[in-house]
Length: 493
Ligand code: BG6
Image 1 (cartoon, rainbow, N blue to C red):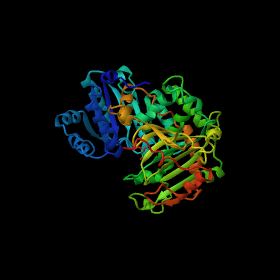
Image 2 (image 1 turned 135 degrees about the vertical axis):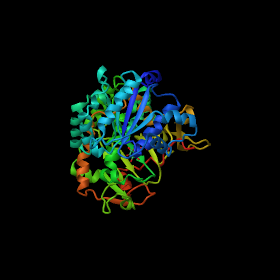
Image 3 (image 1 turned 120 degrees about the horizontal axis):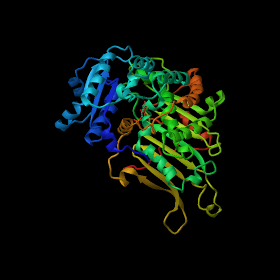
Image 4 (image 1 turned 90 degrees about the vertical axis):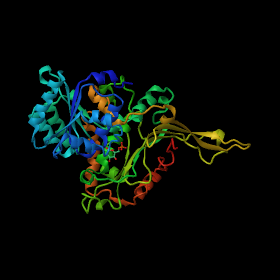
């Protein structure tokens, strides 16, 4: 499996421009990840980070403000790190001061005395992407270090677009100025260590592939349950909702990774090709399917959150039952579920295997006990297999038991967080863990979103601290199944 070579990272002279440097994403994820990489000496020897945003700050004030989210006990280390950061007041939406920024980049290159790789990180609201991309083109930020023709890289965040059409429009504008090889569309789930490990688990172990199909798998449950609410993101979240915020990207990405055929190489194009095959095979939803197979909920108190409309119909819980119409997965239901303010925080993918009614044991169980495989991403990363075993004793009693592999126990090494990994990939220009043009996933989500906007099915209100709307239990019970994520949570300390 490819991983960024620290020597190549060190040798890549780079300047990052972080647009939206004062926002939540920058403060909570991007700058702390840079600091972690700095501590472990995994950044380029020649690096400059330009923090760009609309508010007035000096570079010193800005660096000080980062300490709220970065534990900088070692003063010397912090001094060295903060000296890499320079703050520039500018507005990528209106274009104000972008020429100043452009001059700054040239100065950095002159000081470095090398043609520096420019990276434009769009940590701004996705609602201003269109104008921002136009301005980047207008001020020729796409061209990079011009004398040597080293083109800039641009990093975008999710959600990329609001629906198929807007994502398409964004791609059109981006492609006017940037080639695909310059574009790094982030879905941070792909940078998570366990998500990458799914590739190793599936394609590095011969024992799973023969049963990874409709003949053996009964159903698959992909869950991203969170205890937190929307925090201070009311303005963004109320326009998005859980379906666009999490299902369209993180959960559909997980779905493709656990169901795709083996890519021929661990490369951007091979992996993207296999993912697209899966997305294209997802059964289109009729209106009736949407009413029967989707659930949207909102937690009590959501509409009182700051910057949320008082009569908001935005969902904080989304459940969709998918089918993949291909030879491997025909008729296997995939339940994708996410929600905020739920009882537990867990992200996992659980494969439930079919119950084979073994004649041999018919007198020892009321009904066969199915096997499960749990691929757990959060809170603790690991893989669990539930098996049937004979309980020790003179009588034959069969019971389910768990076999667990927990990353923390097996590998005593620090794991880079998703953003650290992705930043390193951006520096060396490896696009394997980044998204393609994302059109196919929007095509799946758009019809559901359209019906939800019309109020179908009805928005259900659920209590914070519950597992979501009651009808979620009813939906799965009607299929003769139950939710497994809370039961099969593994690697508990
Ligand atoms: C983000 C969503 O992309 O992913 C958030 O916008 C969500 O709403 C988050 O909380 C979950 O990611 P993680 O890595 O914190 O589990």
